[in-house]
Picture (cartoon, rainbow, N blue to C red):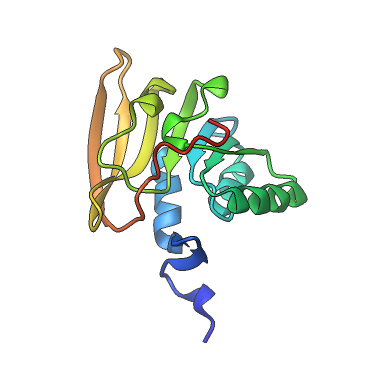
Length: 171
């Protein structure tokens, strides 16, 4: 049986999965990307979503906590000629050297939006991430208002692995 054609998450190692195609596409759609957008991705994984966003015309900075994933994704994305920059580190800290971002995609669940990510988001920008605990979360869109306040809109229940916080590599 070929599982790549099923709309289900697939294991990729290190107790991580690649999101089911529907959820990956929905998350990118919810970002509302325009060509030329500066995007932060938290959780590079295999590099698939970063490659899709780059193909849409975004410049992507992606932070991955698993060094082996970051190395493999970098090689894969370079071979594609994708406009993606990858580093190993704690994604909850973002990538301040390249902020402010038009959009931020977080591919792991957090109990709350990491404050550093809100700080690195342009006013009018969006963060798409699963918010909640260990078992069930709500796929959410966090919008940063011009005055700096945020508004959160819940989209649907989802289940993601937890965002790893506190990784020191590259942060």
